[in-house]
Length: 65
Image (cartoon, rainbow, N blue to C red; front, side, top):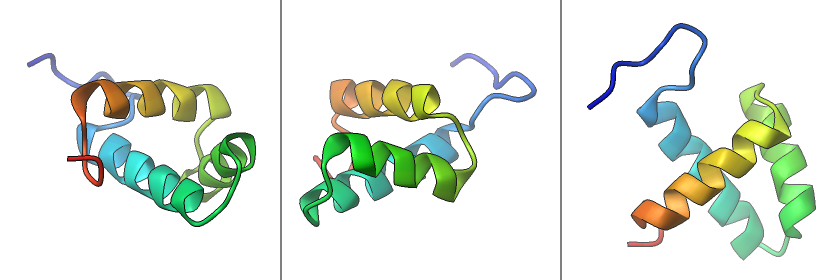
């Protein structure tokens, strides 16, 4: 596995972001609104949230599994 680079989001953080994103969308938030809210909550960019979303879906991270 590749080492985390300074300034990168750790795997644990990415998994937490993905879980929160899925829960927000399951709770009725639209994808754009949920990405904005989660970006603010975790102090990351919306582009980073989109990257995490793609990674989580590709890897079937919880709560998808």
